[in-house]
Image 1 (cartoon, rainbow, N blue to C red):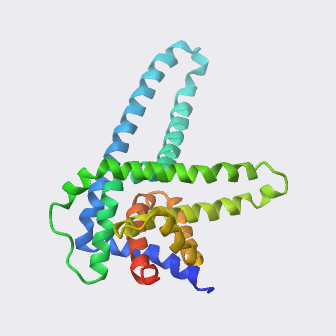
Image 2 (cartoon, one colour):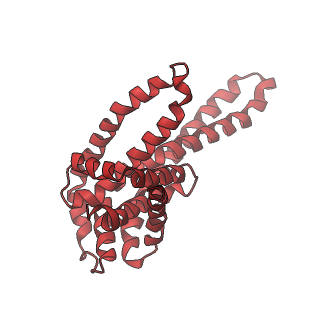
Length: 244
């Protein structure tokens, strides 16, 4: 029983190692390139607009405030980094949602010793993209229903001491639900059935979700968290949950 969280944590690292498999790289590369391109465009637009703002602002300031230009640029850069850090995973999930089901399928085939899906699967992903993105939005709405009560705990005296720990547990659970949806969804399990399976292996699930949560807080590494978590959740499904 006490080993279950560590076994769950190991599946995230197994997911990272699976991404190195030649058969699986293409399922990771395409959404990652799209996501980085979107962020590059957003950052370029932000810097262009801020540069124009500074060009209009600085001449209107007194000469003795000219030293403010570099601190303002530094503050803008820091805020931009925080924006990327906190929104990358969210936008990555939306963009890659049509591909994550294919990645989960390819990982399962790889673990079972079968050949990867034949070519042309990406066209199927594009056809199913609207539905996949809607599913992501539904999950976000479900998660939001739990976020509000947890936020209220932060303002209740004494109880707010436990709030950060409850928030961490909630986040770990939500990440497990998020990424386990792809392999289980490929087997037509409903969201309620998925939650039931994961509740039966709660410590295993929290170990996986907690490790994923920590990885999302590490810059650069968080770029690979999503595909690694999908691959790791698929391995966990094949080796631990499917037999239930």
